[in-house]
Image 1 (cartoon, helix red, strand yellow):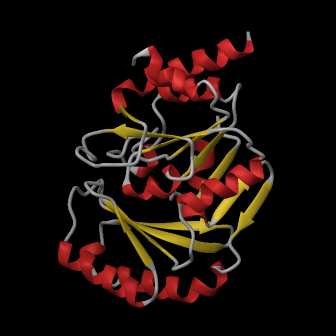
Image 2 (image 1 turned 180 degrees about the horizontal axis):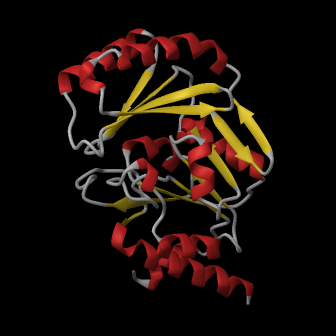
Length: 254
């Protein structure tokens, strides 16, 4: 990357990042998901100079053990935020529990979903979202999937589909997204200066629009996707990009 590009980020005061497809691979089973060692090591080093937050649709119980470099997490699409030892859960979430239970029961009753992974995203003792994940299977019955999506919409849920990604997410019809999550994290973490946000999908657009330095991570699942970013970084070049950012942060200290 040209020096004049990376120099744009000299004033970055915090790094916020998506998880799946950004710092962790998409095409692995959930149980094997983690940031590759070169990326984890660079983020761990960067975290010594500026605060890092992870902004994801995954739940906190999944994210936190895999992202020890972070100081804060926005989980389940912003329905739960953890900063330090404090947990912030959206006050409207309890109202959606009966509808979640009905949708889960419906999904489990459909034969086509028998060997598809149903991720129940926990927010404390509550359900905050569902993920229908067919990564290990390779494909899904489109008619059955559309039937579930239709039922979810009728119940008032919002459904997030990711172009080229082998999973969808279902969330309550609460007005939260990654843009809301970033603004809440900025406030709760006391971040005063410019934020860099790294993401790879349409779901990251609200976050990219409220930060100073939006960065897109390009991989084979989002080829041709247009996002409102300052620049794209190929997934294979991410460790180098992070190393360049780390060098800038170190130079500001000395």
